[in-house]
Image (cartoon, rainbow, N blue to C red; front, side, top):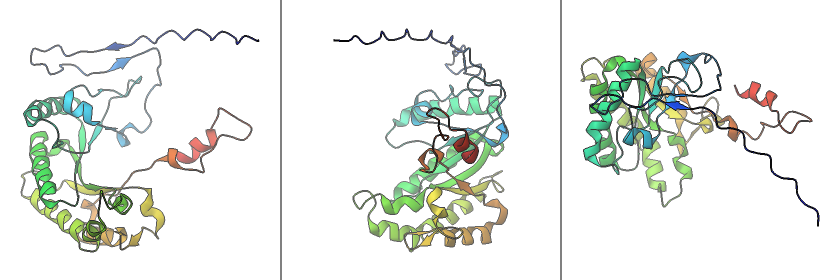
Length: 269
């Protein structure tokens, strides 16, 4: 029997240094970051980019969001929070997590896109908004980029009846629930001092582009919604679109290459 060639030795690990909290209050007094032998240089158009905060980081170590882009000297400028607090997280953990987040945001002079949910449960949606409102007041209007009301609601129709009943999809879109709650959120925030001009959005995915210019079917009346909000709120509304190039089946490797995808990168980026 033939023998397979021995596996090459693994590459040496990159030198990594993590800055840890040094204050007695358990809140990091310096930016959290990692340093390795890789240096990608300055981030291009950094003012137009930010990081989304995952649930684990938000709940457990909200002061340890990197202050700079990984392996780059470019400072981070903005964050996206999908929620103010998850109802499944212990309530007693919230004040500390929020305070750590506030310190980190103020130290880095960051701006935050804060999300609030739209679901089939109005009671839970209002509970979520009440927490969002408190978090906004804590951060201050100067650190709030915008409020995102709902996330990819055009996809509710594909969640399945066990998760999102057809009656809910109908109420959200044809019943006007989404638009009604959006208006309520704007009007409520207008009563919060300093937030009268903070901008609003709702984050959509690429599916909304299935229409001309946006999809407008009973299960996803996106175009109707956009006409309403832009007509009422003008430039206080901003467009937000999740783009996932790695889901695009037209992205392929370069011709005659098994390792390079320069053409796909040029198209997607």
